[in-house]
Picture 1 (cartoon, helix red, strand yellow):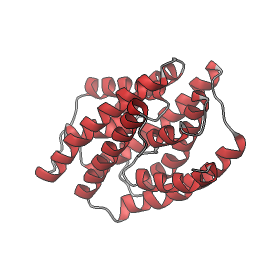
Picture 2 (tube, rainbow, N blue to C red):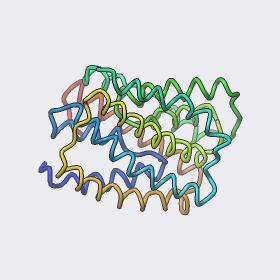
Picture 3 (cartoon, one colour):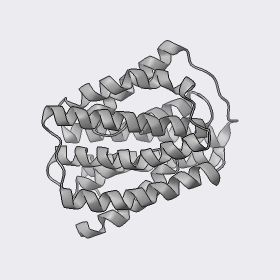
Length: 251
């Protein structure tokens, strides 16, 4: 596949991911790894695109009064410094993608069972639990070069914390702050690399896709469909990463 088609592909990725509150970082990483050899350039590009997509989503969630800072801040307070630290660590590309893919497949499978077989419920977490979840996922987000929403959202859905739309709005702002922190961490470590020509084209694609997806998320989708779409997306990304990096099978 020619690299000139990437902006169109990333447009579709951003549209789909933003509809469930994600930035698309995991798929950006997987696809860019087919075209770029510098892993830090891949991570840097994914983080920048994440920021573009979830900034739009966060604004839309705030305008639609889904965003709730009183519920969200404990998840964010330690995730930001931990994402910064994680971005400065070095990790084997293949090992990480295999671990990530396996975890996503399991999380997505449980999510599909949850949203197709059970009633949607919600419950509140105590402050220490929110802080510990935010910090640990923030660290993983920084290490992997994505915003962390694709870890946080399935976990919160599985444990019935609020409804899927509220969780999607938290995932959006979680990805935003941790992606920004990750970029700062990469910059301070001297590993923030971008292809100026390519990044400009990709930004245009994801901004257009993210704008449409964020609108659909807040105006058109019901809660159960939103949860099922999240689950399908998580399973697909996990399966793709395992097949590609474990068995060199492309899907």
